[in-house]
Image (tube, rainbow, N blue to C red; front, side, top):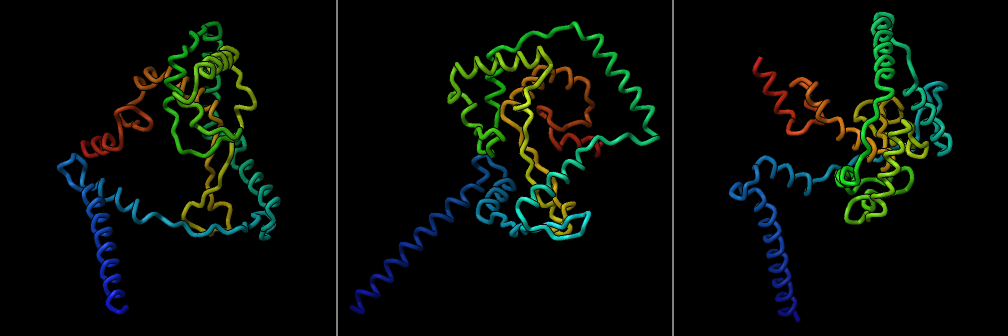
Length: 255
């Protein structure tokens, strides 16, 4: 029995060693630059996979900034978050030094709306709607209506859904009115990484809009992207095609 036990231990050790060796080989094989992958990118990809960040447990209590009391009741916490974000999103008047500029911008906006009031853009085609649907990102949280992105991406989304969305988006554009159901948003409070976790000012809001709203916004952007891109300077690299932070670095170093 003792000999059999030693034999089993040796066999188990060999199997575990072989498995660990294969795992290490597979991981470090990704860092082989001969396969076309950047070494630094491979290192960070490996680090994120093997050593994922573990965020500390978020406390279930927040401090009311008005009364200074600690709130733990779920319903009271919801009410506190609602009041906080309503206050953050309030319509605030411009500073006195910028009041003239804001007034001129309002006049310019109203003038442009009057000029373009009778200029109708063409309707979006089903092909354009499909393009916007394909650009939706997967593995995201469900929207406020409970829909997952997967059901709106081809080929899961069928021809009937594409036709319905095309009619819906074109009607919203013609009437310049968005249905109230599409305007819903979920707000998640995320800790900024600094300050007290119990303080509401240490949280930032992440907004999750409806998928229908996302498709509408993508259609508007795709229709006007060329005009927007032509009127932006080289210093504006955010959300632009074929441009990233390297463009900003190049401009700064070239000065």
